[in-house]
Amino acid sequence: MNYNSEEHKSIYTTYHKKRFKYLLDKIDLLCLSPDSRILDIGRGPFTKILSRKYSNVSTMGLDLSLTSLDKADSINTDIVPHIVFDLNNTKSIQVLNNYGKFKLIIFAEVIEHLMVHPENVFHFLDSILEVGGYIILQTPNAVSITKRIKPILGIHPFMEYNLDGEVDSHHFREYTKSELFKYAKKVGFEIVEHEYLNYFPSSTLTLRAIYFVSGIVPSFRNAQSMILKKTI
Image 1 (cartoon, rainbow, N blue to C red):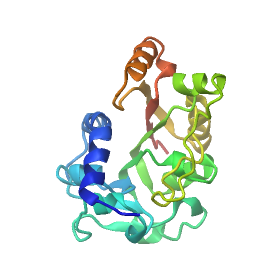
Image 2 (tube, one colour):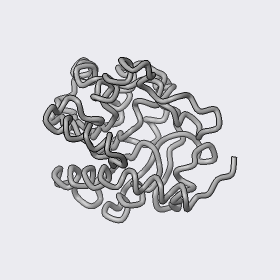
Image 3 (cartoon, helix red, strand yellow):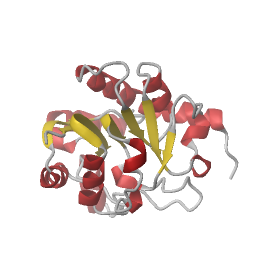
Image 4 (spheres, rainbow, N blue to C red):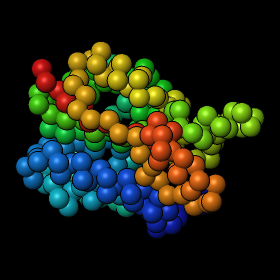
């Protein structure tokens, strides 16, 4: 597979531009100090944006040799350290003793790529988050209007497994609001906020019509964002 880093960066950042802006605005509302310990799970263009504003950012995920997004907009690991850790192995938490706890964890567009139970993932995040700290989680809405309509038309509502794509780039499982609430509460997080959003571009008349309808019914929107807080 031929890989063009500049093309990948351009396509990815354009598609996620509105989401990045939303995410930065939410981080600003948390009023963190510039040197707060922040963990961005997954490493890519947003990490670089975040590191320009906050001086103590780390990332976590697969070895960088296995991913493409970091190559699309690479960051010096001396400036933004990378913790090599596979979240599909959340029961192996020896990493905790080495890296301490974080004030904020960005867990954006990741959970749908994991093959483990969300409750295990939330327990892991809880273990590396300091008391009073926050998680901002972003993920697709499993019951958006498009995913309700497609099965009626005989179309599978979820993305196809791509053998030639980046490692784990496909979605293994998407979640509803009630599922995310259930797992987060079970682990003990306070749910500060949840919003349904359409922050991906609508490139066709059909998509614009769908977005219009989902603007009236929030639960039909294609994405969701939530803020969790660790209180104890």
